[in-house]
Length: 178
Length: 103
Image 1 (tube, chains in turn purple, yellow):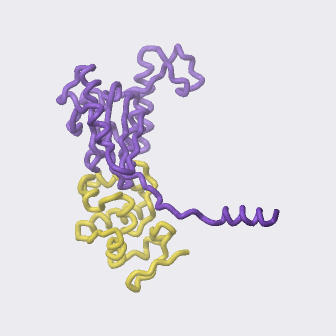
Image 2 (cartoon, helix red, strand yellow; image 1 turned 180 degrees about the vertical axis):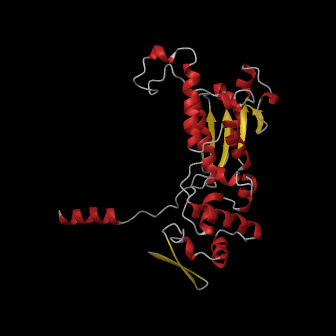
Image 3 (cartoon, each protein chain N blue to C red; image 1 turned 45 degrees about the vertical axis):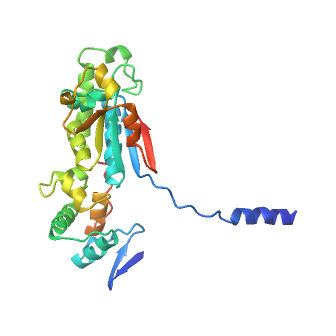
């Protein structure tokens, strides 16, 4: 019995050949939503990656495209209806009152300002300046009738899903979908 | 307390290599730390380092955005000067604590 225990113990103490910790080298962040909190999650992670010396690519699709249009990038809203985590005590019907969503979004942006969080267009400029690349989804752009000139100047191109996967080429890449 | 010895310069650093006391910093030390990350410091680097040190001394929580809005250097140049994580690397070279900003 003791022999067996000893064997088990030695087995446990013998550390397996240590592998070099595989680092994240690149992130591809896909943003498919246009709500302010989802877009910021994508932007913070992309910018945060660059700050750590990690390569970052962004692909905006469907409602996420709103975040990279000249027209709406700085006018994103949060959802006050169908969002149970938003003011949990608030009756759903109130969230749907005219102007409520705009007011809630305004308040949210004010809080973000306090934390020194940049507006979407400035954030995108920061990511671009840091070497991050931003792309729009061709299928969604076609669907919403958006053209190159509708997007912010930092948007590098309107690309297919195949091209998007090519952005993730290379070892140590992580794809994040929002 | 860990001690870092570089070319006869002795300073106290934390486990990540950041200086524990910014007052122990000297330009010579900056050159030594920068060598470790393959950066050859120029006057331009020192302008940024001195700005960072001054702001840190004022108690400002540093972020990439603040550096970009400093009027001294834009974000693009900041990334070029300190490639591979500009805020962290420049803070380490400037002898100030590791920044805690997410932006």
